[in-house]
Length: 231
Image (tube, rainbow, N blue to C red; front, side, top):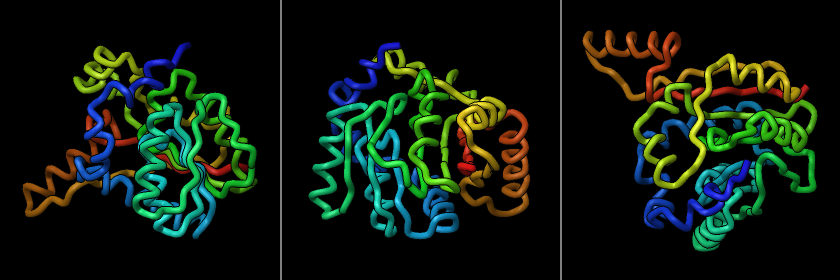
């Protein structure tokens, strides 16, 4: 399947949106805190392959946390922006253009690999997971923060598909477990993103309802957060 829309997305979207990331969406900081926590716990200050890095802010944040990072994206323009912002901020990150379905950066000893809100743009996502597995050292960890199955029905996803032609998938837990198992990963574990704080008894009830919906039917703003290990 052609992924020309994904390659051209950065040239067609408002550039202010790309340069503003992640500061235009505070929710993203909460989600990325999970990334920093998991990698600090599992690999310490290690080497990380940031797959589908977009304009590179995830790679820069990981570098600031002490990791050695290689960021990869299918869009040449995204990588140009990532390099420009990294140079401006004096962040030591290596960026490369590459398709996650056929990825080969020439080294296969990464401590960690990350898909942050990008795998749902990949039609053959199973192949992308296999390429991530190939780049990890034995015992290395993969971290996914991805959309739930409801994403494919969301207005924003439908609007993006219609306007830019990009792929917008959504995943059930069963889909991700199966794809990770077929890619060779073991010990896949799901995390729950608690979201913003809730106060008082009404807030407590709201939090309980959200947790129930997230686990049973997937609350629309919940994420699949998965950590898996290369055996």
